[in-house]
Image (cartoon, rainbow, N blue to C red; front, top):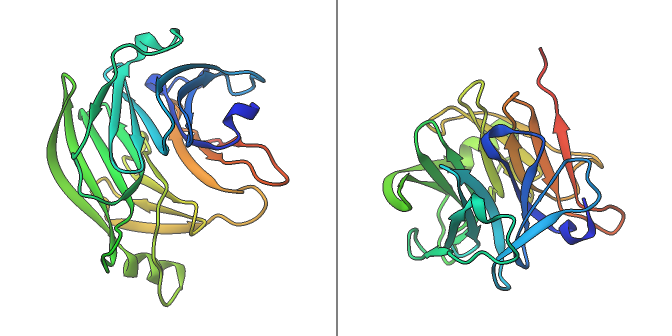
Length: 241
C-alpha cells in the first residue's frame, strides 16, 4: 500500500469489482480508492481527525464507522471531489462500546455493526447489531452474539476474550467471516452468526489484520496495518475451484 495507507483499517469493493478497492486508515477522515497494484491512491476527505475503523458500500452509499459507533454516510458519486459536501452523521445508533467492524449485505439491504469491546462490562460475548438501510435511514433489525466460550472451545483455549476487528459475508456460501487482529484469528459463522469454525492467522503474513472483504468472484482479501519491518498491505486468497 502507498505510505498514506500505512495504517489501513478497512476495505471494501463496489459491487464486488476487484479493479478498485476502497479503504480508510484509522487517523484521518479520508476515503481512499486505488487499483490493487497501484503505487498511488486517490482520496477524498469526508471528516476530520478521528478513529475510523471500517467502511462498507450499500445502494451506492459509502458508510464509514468510527470506533465510538458513529456512522458517516455519503454518495459514492462524490469520491472524485476533494471534499465530500453532504456527509450525514448518525450518532447513538448502538450502545456505548468500542466498535471496529462494519459490513453490508446488499441483497437484503442490511448493514451490520460489530462490537470490539464493551467497556466496564463483564460480558462474555461479542455483539453484532443489524439494521435495515433504506433511503439513508437505519432501522434496528436484530442483535446477534458470538460467545467467547464457543470460540475458545474451537481453538482449544481454556479462555478467550474475543476482540474482532472486521467482518464480511462470503457471497458464495452466505457464511460470515469475522476477523480478529488482537487474537490473530478468523472465525466463520453461518448466515445467522452461529459459529462453525475458527482458523489461526499465524506467521509473517498477518502483521495486524484489520480489514476483510470478498470480491464478486468470491476471492477473499485481508488488509494489514504496517509495522516496523513492513508496509501496509492487502493479501488476496483465491477461491479454490
